[in-house]
Image (cartoon, rainbow, N blue to C red; front, top):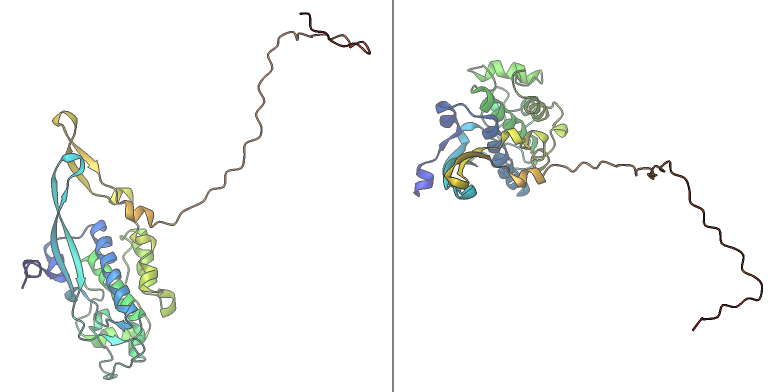
Length: 269
């Protein structure tokens, strides 16, 4: 086993040791989406997306901005445990009324209790549950057994989204928890959701050594994420022609006498 995998742990254990910043939650969500895009493009649904099945790998980056040589630890997240993965459109095969869940009940969606066909929106609902848990530090539902949860899902209810969450995060979660599976969109589509666009305030700062050996904080912008934002075009109408003010001075007139008929100019040489 490599040192990288030996140092990895589940997202569940990672969240037990610290609270996640808004920036880290967005970074992790992007990584999950990129994995889901690959899974769905291969014609499969993961069917059991949850923090226990997401592995966090520490990695050390050397941000040598301005020659400061400042090292910062970051993390990479990967999807694991594909034991319940099912081809898109296939029947689960072991659906039962008392336990109509293919994956972990707390992360399953309402339509799973009505029919047992694997579709991509299943993973999007589960991802919404994971993002909600990253923000709150708690499971998406406050139930210890699936029977109580079954009643809520039968009524097509979604986990409660706290008002304390950022506005863009609430909008994103409402999309993941849409009653109509079609309104959830796709993994590739949600990867471009405004929630995942980094703001300037989200960027990380590093200390660098400037001229004269002075240390200062520098904001590191992620150019790739900025370029992913949709361009907004602003049409600026042309300015009306500008006329210079005429000075209040007397005009000078030059009188040119008419040229006599049949007169030719001769060079005086």
